[in-house]
Structures are given as structure tokens and as C-alpha cells.
Image (cartoon, rainbow, N blue to C red):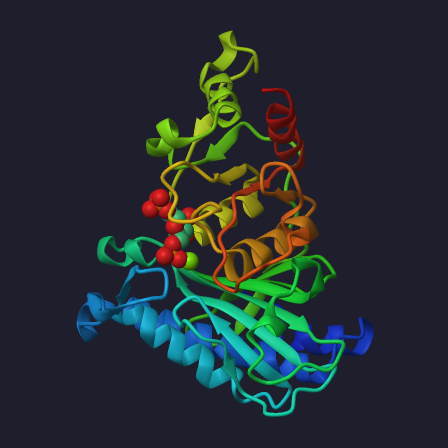
Length: 335
Ligand code: AHM
Ligand code: MG
């Protein structure tokens, strides 16, 4: 990787000078990048440091936490706390909202994160990631008011994820397109390797946990049946399927070569929506995908327009190549 490729810091300072992003947002993003670098290191040395197993706890959703889930959570909290403009943090791993400021002011930030997404992949040495979202508050809120963090995805000013795969990469949007940075061993820098990522409008590849077919609604099953019918079916072409059990990895593939990611609500779901969480999984990925020219809905409506009613709320997720997302909405309208 050539040394002249722009570092994450240079890129952010450029956005500060020319695109009006705030200096405190630059510092916050650099801190988040540092947290991701440290988490990446923990993930890579997990088998040596004995951190891959389950911790002796479950999260608010009743899911067994891995030791690395908790380590990653602590890194996010520690690094986001460096920024004096962060009013509160909302983490997948913690029941309550963390209030960092007693007197939040308009202009302060709320940070939402899933510190280690897809952590069931850790035991089998497959890709995992971290997802984050930043909202800027515009009006007075009170510290301790948990409802004050219930923000629609439209209010995000920044979102991103880190993928801990064969290499570690950081993908970020501040509302001016999507850019990807690869962590360079040796210098320790994230460098711009995937400028201006865009999702092709059409695709013949989708990602879904098909073992849940029996639990989907009729329109979802019809869409799936038509795709796997191949050339002889109503879609008139063959479709390929991929599923990594890590949303970060599946979304990263879609940002790179197109595709459709689906985690629909189904009859076996633990709550009212799908499996994935609105505020720290669906919203940031929806913002990124839309900024890359794709689309993100709950099957019918834009995810970023959903009004949250609780900060661990779940939602059905359909995102990726725009033509396919629209087509699935048609299936829901017709079947
Ligand atoms: P997690 O946040 O508890 O790791 O769960 C979210 C993950 C997503 O990354 C992935 O798309 C999905 O759960 C996989 O679900 P399944 O176990 O049904 O394959
Ligand atoms: Mg997750």
C-alpha cells in the first residue's frame, strides 16, 4: 500500500476545511478509529489471550455475551469519553444509556454502537465488526432522560463500521458519500483505499438466513422462491446466495460488489421487529448504504424514517442494490 495514500486524519481534516464537518467530530472519529484498532488487535490475539469464550453474563436482549463483546464495549466507552461534546452513549451490550454529561447542550453528540457485531463468528475465526452512529442534538435535553436518545436515523450526521476480516477496514460516511480506509500494519494508520464507494443498482446476489424460511410472511417467501427458481422462473436469471452471519461482513460485500441483505421480521423473532437492532445496527447501515447510492427499508418504508420507541428496538432490514430493494417492496404490496 503506497505511503502517499491519504490517512484517515488527513481525510477528516480535509472534510473539516472544505465540507464543514466540526473539529470535535474529527477528534471523535479519530478516537473511534483508535478504539477499532485496539478491538482489531484483541480479535486477532483472542485465541492467545483466552478472550474468545463466553463471559459470565447476558446482555439486555438475553444473549450470551462473549468476553470480547465486553472488552470491545469498554474500548468504545473509553475512547468516546475523550470527547467533551459527547452527551450520551447507547451500546448494544448495556441496558441503560450512559450519560457522559450532566448538562447536555444543543450541538452535543449522541453515539450509538454495537461494539462487536456477529460475535458468534469469533469461535470459528470468521469476520466480525463494530458499527457506530452519531447524532447531533439540536435542542435542550435532560441528562438521564432515556427517551431523549430515541432519534430517527434521519438525524445521523455520521455512521460507520470497522470490519475485522483478512484486513481491518474502516468505512465511514459524514453525509458526503462513503469512503473506506484500510488499516496499514506497521504505520498503524488507516489509509484511504476505497474512495467514494458506490453500490451497483442491480444485482443477482442476496444474503439471508434461509433456515428461517418457514417463519417468513408469504410475500417474503414468494420473493425468495422467485429468486431461487433461476432462469426458468419469473426473474429469468440465476441468483447467487451468501450468508456470513455477520451483518458487517455481508454489508461490506454489498458495498464492494452489490447485492441484497435481508433480515426480515419473522414469526420466530424475539420481539416485534426482526432480529437486528434499529439504533446501532439498522440505522447506521441504512445511512451508509443510502450514501453509497443503495436503499434501505424495513421491506416497505425507509429505515431512517422509523420512529424509535426504545433504544434496543429491533427492525426488519432489507438493504443494498436499489432496484432489488424496490422490487421487494412491490412484492410486499402485491402478495
Ligand atoms: P449480534 O449483534 O448479537 O452479533 O447479532 C447480529 C448478527 C448480525 O451480524 C447477523 O446478520 C445476524 O446476527 C446473524 O443472525 P443468524 O444467527 O440468524 O444467522
Ligand atoms: Mg450486532
